[in-house]
Image 1 (cartoon, each protein chain N blue to C red):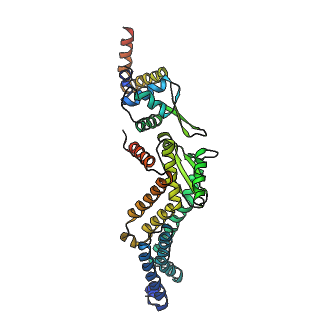
Image 2 (image 1 turned 180 degrees about the vertical axis):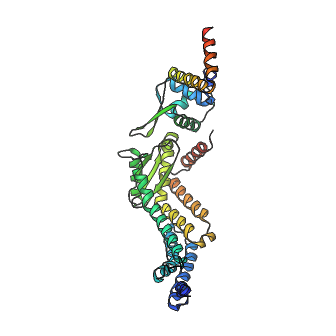
Image 3 (image 1 turned 60 degrees about the vertical axis):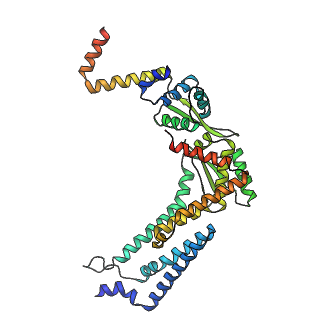
Length: 248
Length: 115
């Protein structure tokens, strides 16, 4: 009986339940707004607002519920440790994605920063035209044609040596412009936010994330094409990357 | 002709041709190897890059990163010259036969070399 009161007391308290229901209602509202929002940065912010208000009742429950263990009965409130594990996992994902992944990329022996290079100057010139923070350019020691960007802490563009081996000068510039386009549209932030959304929110089943990613790719492509005044080089680069993946 | 002579190396025809090109010149870029082979057969630059990566993973070719103001790329070279490579191959084959067939293999070699 004592155990039941301890576990379910929270749900009979009108103030606590009122706060929790209001938080969940806000979460639904943020979700609806997020689905309608097209601008990537605002979309990502609405994802975080949705997640915060969705998770708030869980945190509220954990912190206002004092019972953990009753002797002889094992874990009286198994809901509390389960929710705590869920929150810790979520927090670990955020730390992994936000802090460790960029850090690991930075300290990896297979990556090195490009300095005093024509391409670094190219990236600098293109980002300064947009009034963006200058991204640093990094090489990845692999023959696979890879390029991506990270915008956490400091914008960085990674490109593999394999990519440089395969592409012509103009094609490589198109790829770099595509990545600058991603940075401009905050695509990596949006990608990480949608990953978290998928992990933590049951509402994610109602969202078509692939269309979000396709839209981000289209915007980055459009930026590269506008920058070069032709789609020829970007298409050439894409064709070669696809050929490499399909090859032999 | 060369391709035929390299078929026993358990390499694909294109892998053998790439290796042959590298044996002829000491160090080459992907594009150099592509230019070397495209005269003889229809081949794509991407295929050469894939084959070189595969040979690198097999330990048959080495590569170093060359960064210059104009670009950055891999400079490939054969890990062993042709004779050394063939010698290693023969050694590995003989060792495998001896470890698998023991005395039978030894007596065969003895018989074969006394001819």
